[in-house]
Image (cartoon, rainbow, N blue to C red; front, side, top):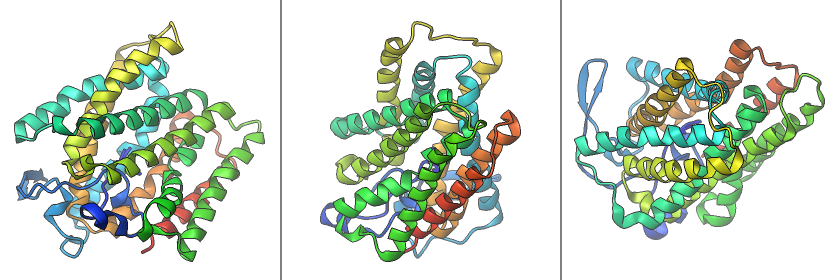
Length: 352
């Protein structure tokens, strides 16, 4: 993404009524809710072992530490990986139909995440199946739309539109959570971010825009599905499960739904699939969905929110840059302005 993200992260907060009193969105509030498990998990960084829980409840916000050198490089690497994710999807769509590609990616990620959970002794929490189904459905919608978007529009444009997710989340939270009303500062952020989305669509008049308006719309719908996933994780008990448990449910359900739905959209599920495409698929399943998401959760459990925020804002910019650099996509004058509005809007929405 976060998934964070922007790419896959979690919501702060407690249980019951306290969940309605959370502060405004921040990148450590983007993806999944925290888990209450108190156990410590050995996590290896740069050759040293640190007994830090993958769950954010290991450290309170006041206890989280400022950025250090290992954290800087890990966060920068993850931001780049998540930015390259869109590029890999775009290229991978040449080998597989996008819906089938998304489904197979989840199929490959299920045993990887499942093996990690089994090794750590974590439960899938089958008793939370209702919430798991909802998360899985929204996760399926998120990547259904994103993969289709990248099949029908440029990486540059999809990055601007998909990563506008926080503005939809902020709007929904204004009505759903009393503690997250749009203050004047956050309302300005919403206006700036929304202006960036509108400007991206308006820039389609350029002959070099690339792709179709339907691809642009799919990117927006993917971001909205992502926002819906966050809201469900806040309102449903599964939001208190471990991050790995929530990711497991998402990839499990999406593996079933997306692969089953793929034949409904095309008779040609395999396009020009070769060894390079297979490599991209494995990197997506293992590197992005499994290792990437879990590592991001671990990072937001030990570093300050403002630190995570600064790297999260890099993702849409890096993604657009990679589309221009690697694929030679047109940027023009509109896209940088739209991205600047989006990043500025996200910054203000993130302000406490």
